[in-house]
Image (tube, rainbow, N blue to C red; front, side, top):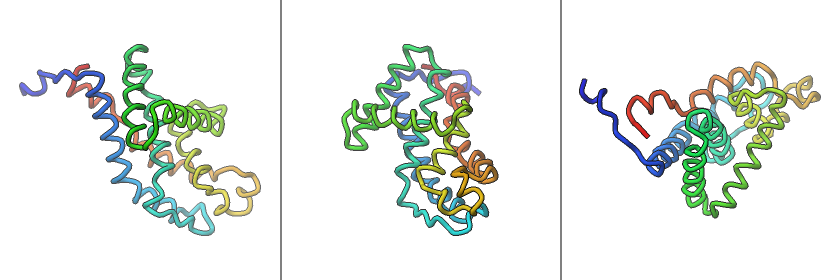
Length: 178
């Protein structure tokens, strides 16, 4: 009871650490299942044969998707500080400078906005990004292949999957104070 009344106070740096570690852990633990679901999806006439080791694109998509929620969760100046710390930490993990990692994230954001246009739904953008980054069009039936568009049934299933990779800020704020 007392534990729910007293919230631990975290600095921006600690928030960035928790965020980065949790996202990378969930990608490491979850991509194997995501790959299996894609490989076995009925929308494809042939299996894309995505391996658990091919999680790089997925990790970046999950990072970009989650970063999009920072601005709606924090005040603008704090979101900027936390995002900068996240870029610094992830840049080190990816063996890149903060500036290079920021550029990579901005390119992914732009790509996801473009493939998701006119929708602004980030879950949908993540599903479409997976479709394009893993070149899944070549495994679809002729109709959707000619359209160069994902089968809507596949996207719906992916939406349900990627929704599980979105950080739950409400739960976080029940435990911590920033």
